[in-house]
Structures are given as structure tokens and as C-alpha cells.
Image (cartoon, rainbow, N blue to C red):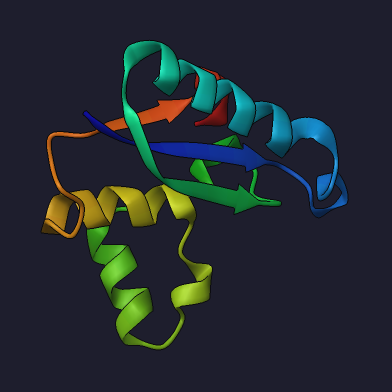
Length: 102
């Protein structure tokens, strides 16, 4: 099965620390264990999940992209929207290190 990974850290101050590396390693090892092909990584840098800040519905994503504000769309919302509109081949898996990434 094809798989995508999602990693996130909450603060721009965390850039370059071990958080992303740890999450990437963990998701990659999990894919290897299951025999999944990890084909793409989605990362939200400096985006808190508190209050759903890393989540947007497909309509909001579409509106931001069409108004030239694609940089405001979270990686998690991009994955979801891409899966919903069919630009990501399904079935597929989204692998995360821990549920607190949401």
C-alpha cells in the first residue's frame, strides 16, 4: 500500500531540533514494518494543533488557494483535500507518529 506521513511541530523555535527527525524516522520505520511504500511526507512547521490550527475543510483550502493564499494552507489540510479530490491515489495510508500530532 502507498503511504504518506504527517509530521508537525508547534513552534518555529523548534525548527532544526530532533522533533521532525524523530517523527520522520518513526513513520518510515512503521511503513517498513508493514511493507508500505512511503511516497510523500507532509510537514507543518511551527503550526500548533491546539484549537485545530493545523486543520481546514476542503472548501476553505480551495478558497485560500484560489485567492492566492496557498501558503496559509496547512500540510494536513493539503493531504485531506488532495485525497478528497483524487490527486492522491487511494486507498492509501496516512502515517503519524502519535495522535497528538492532530
